[in-house]
View 1 (cartoon, rainbow, N blue to C red):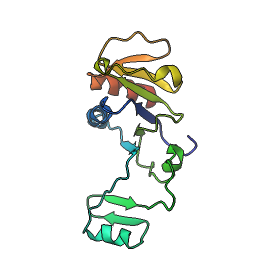
View 2 (cartoon, one colour; view 1 turned 135 degrees about the vertical axis):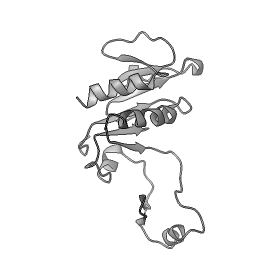
View 3 (cartoon, helix red, strand yellow; view 1 turned 60 degrees about the horizontal axis):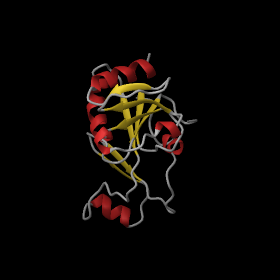
Length: 172
């Protein structure tokens, strides 16, 4: 990733495996160690972050792009793409303020080349991604795994241990 200023770590798995659930547990654990975390989530849907009838929605629909919503609590920038194309993580990093971060966690973009932790749940009986993705550095699972070196086996139900692995692997 040419546009990465800080370390980037992705989380890759099929939908419904628990990527968002794990991330919502990991982020506060990392923050407890004064690690400033940003997040980029790839969506395969045509999402709306503002609501029909709101001023920002009306202004964007009138043709303004980008539209910035800002308050004393947060900022959101909405940019319409003239020609929808699949986003590339490295391109999106150009628009992401990394100056205030120690680490960027990424949900999605699983086909791109950057370090990732694969998530696996035994009950879903999904094939592993790691045999076809050399960027996977660990597998977090709810079952015992025998992984080939140099892959690390992590317990999906122990987010504090995953946070420890992340902080030691990427921030020391």
